[in-house]
Image 1 (cartoon, helix red, strand yellow):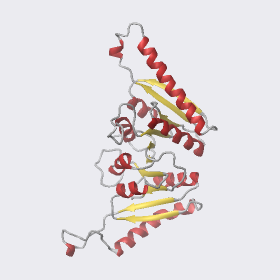
Image 2 (cartoon, one colour):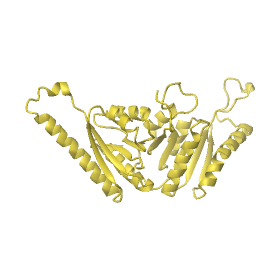
Image 3 (cartoon, one colour):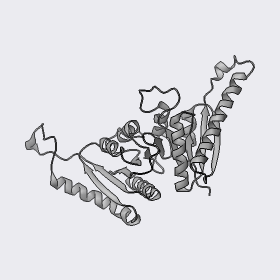
Image 4 (cartoon, helix red, strand yellow):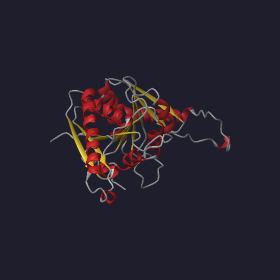
Length: 293
């Protein structure tokens, strides 16, 4: 059976070029083929006035050039990988979500053409990351960094094991360490009233949460003995801690949903905040069989 390809969406921008380089190196690390895809948006209603067909031909030629250049850049970044190309006409969001059904991993740039400079994440990237069927990487920040650990957010969600497996696998492939972060809000004693100290220090609760985290990590440490692991506990939000760690990390890995998110959403608030603010690529793990909403 053919290994599911890594699919990278391209549009010719520098953001998509960074995504291509990242996806090519990931394909090389994981021994998977790479599919470079571009979706050409075309207004068929307006095209009826293009009597000679010249505008469409020019647009298609430009789109083919985008795909060809991206494939060449992928082979330059990782010469040994198998690269295929795909050019479609239609809605980028619709096509990419459909393509993700057969993809092993979908890789996107943080912004595309037409994005406003003030926006930290393009609308196409956010919509696809939110609804894709496969795991998604949004390449942002220091995409070409060669060093740094893999950081992973750890919680009690049903997908936690799949998230940890993905993170440990990524750390091993990169021959780097793993930083496992658990964020929780301690129970504040009533005698502190409505204004507890800024730095809450409750060693009993911290010890219990740290024990839970180490128990959760234990089987993965045994399975990946060659991956050094640092376990961190924080009272801050998971998004805030992971965003901070992303400044020195190679990759941040989180689940597609966590506790406390609104029922029916496919991407939790932590994932969304990281897609907007992380300083390195972010991998959103979509568990196998997770239903679409």
